[in-house]
Length: 271
Image (tube, rainbow, N blue to C red; front, side):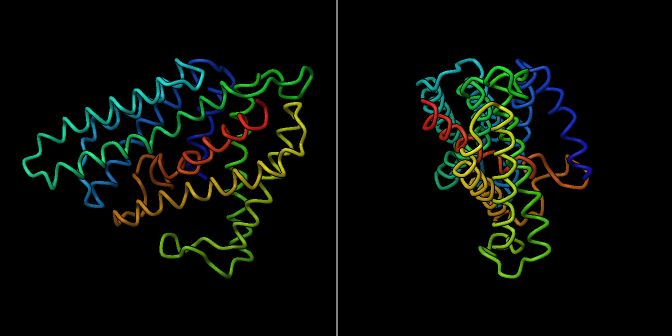
């Protein structure tokens, strides 16, 4: 609860103000998440050029803010970042250390920079119908709200249903607390929440029948991916930045996978 109290106010303020405020929050969170990612990679035995990786991740997010359309600029940045990481790895005296340094730097940056798809989702979102309850937010902020509500609804539903009815676990070698009941409960909760937000955006609530399970599974996969990284590093949390929860990455891991999936849905359904 403390972690939610820390994160919700700045997020709400940014969504209300829009524009550069949303970009600023995403950039800041990306930088912090990237830093924690490289700390975990180090703990897992993978050396990296952390400072370069953080800058690489932030550059990809800024590219998403400056270039709204999905164009080749992001691919070019990935290529440049991979080249710079390779050059930096050349300085390691042992090639057996330089090679994983190169790989880990590129991976860590690309992993954290998946938050750039939060901004790209806002750019690609379909127009909000006039007179819709969330019309004042516009398409960009409205669909980011949908993403946030979907992920938080999934987490909440999975926690309470899993705690009450969870018996059989899955992928316990990564995260022993994940249950099939929680997965189903979270998916139902996310689908209902998405249906409500779609209606508030003037869209057909029927889209939640597909989008709900998609975002639920993506959110769960994002959580498991970070759990695998933490388990490899022997860490309970990604950091200590947020009281009562750990690090920033612990709070946004689900968004890393859910945001690209939400964008894919928008591109497939509305274009």
